[in-house]
Length: 283
Image (cartoon, rainbow, N blue to C red; front, top):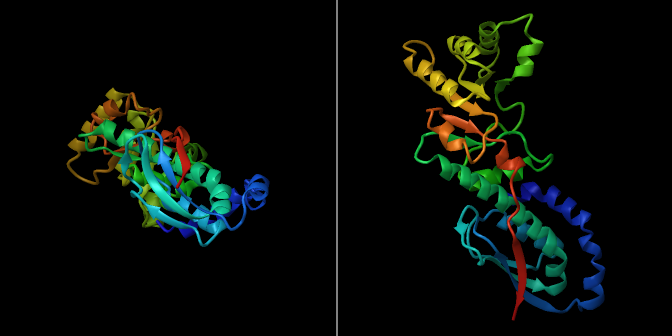
């Protein structure tokens, strides 16, 4: 990751917190005072966002020095020390909350992703995120998903073709499934994914030969049937099969056991819980 890509987000966060006008710190702390501090993860978690946290402090004060005590993507126990800071006390105090917010938030996404990845082992299914992300923060959230060991689906609408149910509804009087896929094949070299809601639509899509078929909100029986039909296909393209819709930690293993290749989970990003982190000054 290149943390400088997210400087505009960090600047906005610092502006939101009015870090440059920290009245309490300015009234109490002499500008010449220097200090050392450590950042602690207060619960078991997958760490993510250390470079972003460091960049917060250095955007306030370029003289702040950061020593990384672990790497993003590492799972640590409660109480783990992950970052050591040295610099002007004013700078450390003014950047504290913004840095901790980023670190706790991104570690929460990474930890959530790791829980899903662990839940499907040893099945072959990959866990993927979706575009159900916080507006403006997609790049950070998708980075955190990777730190958790899961994979990124498309970043934006231009990355691949994904025909959803609303596309099919708009085109319903003009193109059937097969005609739609053939038109897309003639028009682009990008990966084509096609969403279906039931086995009849699946059979039509399978015959048309997209690269990936998205099985939306199908139950376990339907998923197993779709996998069987795909595996029995003797000629033509054998697309990857992706399950999506209503995926939780309680049911993701059962879904993976149906034999699908991919499971896309909006909850990786939209239902994460921030990890508790703190900063402590030391002598």
